[in-house]
Structure formats: structure tokens, C-alpha cells
Image (cartoon, rainbow over all chains, first blue to last red; front, side, top):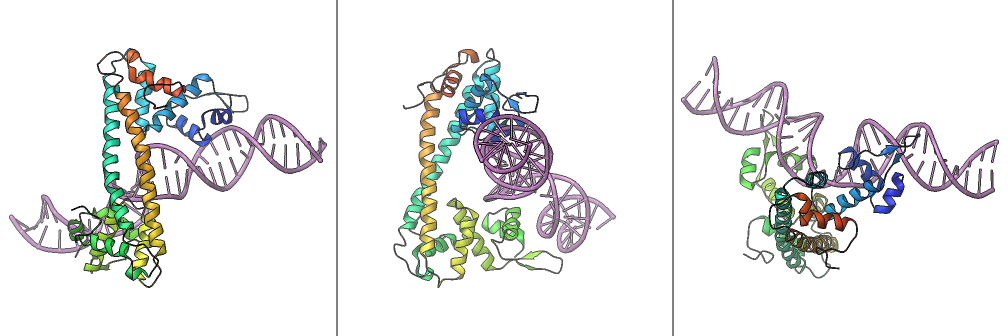
Length: 141
Length: 141
DNA sequence: TTGAAACCCTGGAGCCGCTCCGGGGTCAAG
DNA sequence: CTTGACCCCGGAGCGGCTCCAGGGTTTCAA
């Protein structure tokens, strides 16, 4: 399997595949006589694993560690738990701040329904006022 | 006001202030004889405005455009609306994907309560299986 | 047989929004 | 006279790609 085939099979960009190899996430593949990379089934599976973890927004470093556990299944899995826990905590923290953001933006948007001059735009007024630390409709305080 | 005073007054890191100046978000301040930057009230206000927008997770480019409207209040504010709208859409999209992420991670975590070998770790099993595209408990499909 | 399209290679730069670093100058207090 | 706090600058580094220039190879068709 050449790199283009692997890319098609997994939906991962060719450049990204080479990048994963460079940073040591994907083992070095074999080479044809002309220097082209040749991949096996195991590469495809590992790449799919990496992408699945990325879809869970895990940093590459965590994935690297998970791959270590896959390679050494006799190790204790306490760290796996911790890793998922930490990821969950990150996601939840981000969720909370995004929720706050959404409501601020939504009420900000409500400040300006029509098209007029920037001078009279409620959004701009809110933003400027908020920067001054003054109370404003877009903050729930 | 020197850069350190401005940093203290706004809670923005000194390096970040210089960075904003470099990328043209903050106008160039005056200089003392020794080359130290000196800021006025207007700088402080503009910096506060920038940070407030950053707190809404707006990219610097959007903030640059908002500052343009502040400077030219006679312009039509249609683009301001659009800008906020786009930001809201970004935030909501991210919220949706994070919500999905959270439930996947939460059910993943439930796969392994205790400390045993990685070989028997439900989390690792799930991740590997999911990468294979097989049905698994952590996906709601 | 030639040539165009599609594939592959490498090393390096660029993206965002900072953050840190090294190597230096300035200034007031003790 | 030294210590420490403050300031200057240019450049590198972060994560996770993404793109680019400049080249080689393969494959198919005219």
C-alpha cells in the first residue's frame, strides 16, 4: 500500500501521515526501490487508532502514551484511566467556558438588528462599554 | 504610563502587549528618552477592548476589523453583525462537537473502573475496536 | 515516442496567539 | 558599587498540521 492508498483508506491527508511519521506516532514504513513508502495493514490500523483518539481531541502526546500501552499490554492501566480522566476534565472545562461565551455572543447579537452606522450600533457600544468594565446586557452579573 | 503599569492595570502580560503592537492591534506608544514605551489612557482602553473581544474568543483579525469600526463610526455596521454572527456560529459548532466528545469520553471512562493490566483494560479495548470501525458502547450509533 | 497527468520525495516555511529566551541597557535604593 | 527591578530587541518554540518549491517516477494516451 502506498501513501496515497493509505490516505484514501483512512481519510487522512498525505502530509499528515508523513507528519505523524516524523513525530514518531506512526512507525517508519518500508520503502520501494524508488523510495516510495509502503504500508501494511498494521499501519492502517494504527493510523485509524490515532485518528479516533484525535477525534476525541486528545493531544498527540497522550496518544503516544496510549500506543505505548497497546504495545505493552502487561503494564498497569492506571495511567490510561488518568489520561481519559484528564481529557474529560479538559473537555468539560472548555464546554463551560464555551457555554458562557455563547450566551454573551447571543445577547450581543441581539443589540443590533438593523443596518445603520457603526456609531449607533448596539454591538459596538456594548463591546466598548464592557471593555470599560461597566455593567452591560451581555454579561449576567 | 510605562508598559509594566499598563500590564498591571489590564492584567495583560507585557510580552502580549508588545506582541499586539507588533501585529498592529495596538497603536505605537510614545517613547521616553531611554526608549521605554509610554502609554496614555486611550491605549489602556483599546487594550481592554481587545482583551474583552479575546475573552469572547474572537480571532485577532476580527478584532482588527472591529477596531476599524470604532475608528470610523460613520461606516455601516452590517459587517459587525456578520462578524458576531460568524463568531457565534463557530462557538456553537465547537459546542456541539465538544458535547459529543464529552459523552464519548464519559462512557469510555466507565469501561475501566479498577487497576489491572492494560491487556484487560476496557478503555483500550474500546479505543482499538472503535478505530476498527466496529460498534462500541462509547458511540451512540 | 513523446508528453501530460498523477503520483511520490525532501526540507523548510507559515499558520495562530502567544510565551519564553538570551543578551543587553537603565535606574533607584541600600 | 552592587543588587534588583524594570525595560529594550530579535528570534525561537509551542501544537498540529498545511502548504510550498523543486525535484523524481509512473502510467496512460495520442
